[in-house]
Image 1 (cartoon, rainbow, N blue to C red):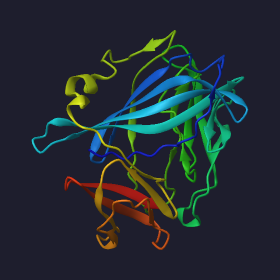
Image 2: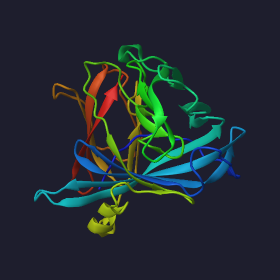
Image 3: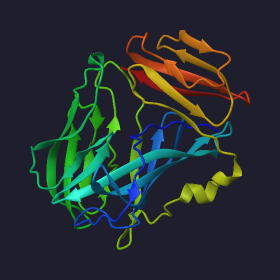
Length: 304
């Protein structure tokens, strides 16, 4: 089965220990339930040791997507297990920083007051996408959350290409804390993921507000019952090329515009590593793949 999910994929470092005064402790693991069009599941974010990267002592986290869907009888069935990237953070004073591309950007600033803003990243959006190169978020509230930790609520600016919105505490975050790429064009309906916090634990803290097993879907449906395959397509959004990597044979690729017109087709697609979208006008396109088992899968892509 095939699943596509795009996050900020960073590069590999060398090992060392990073000590935190705030944020998470060693062996931190988050579970977030998510839903989107066509499938659902949970995202697992797990501490994978500490490292030095770009001269900074940082914590390394690995993301894994456990995906499910419904069959024709309406039963929940496995969709696959998919690597979803790496994430790096470090702390300094009351702030948490994360690695975006080749530099660290501010993720949380717990010293800010309501109404204050801070930049969470820099991108290179197309002018047609109406996004700003600098993405900012604003504090809409501060206080102490139900767990007793200092917390901030933030809302992404409307022209922010990177979205960070939610309520986060300085001990483990709680809401989904990875900045996600989005479109700023209000005329474009773009597929988004809805994440809900399920549980967290590290060496000194366990948080499970619903008392439900963190990997309930995995243990009760059983992803080991199916053979899993991997397809990566990205970045999403993109201004030009989509990179494609698969561990199986792709027989056909189609790109379909919002009016249902096929604007690209390759019927002998095995070995194709990218699709050039730069000649197309900005908007939402459907990428359709047919695999070696004659199954067809689709994904919406934003060309900005």
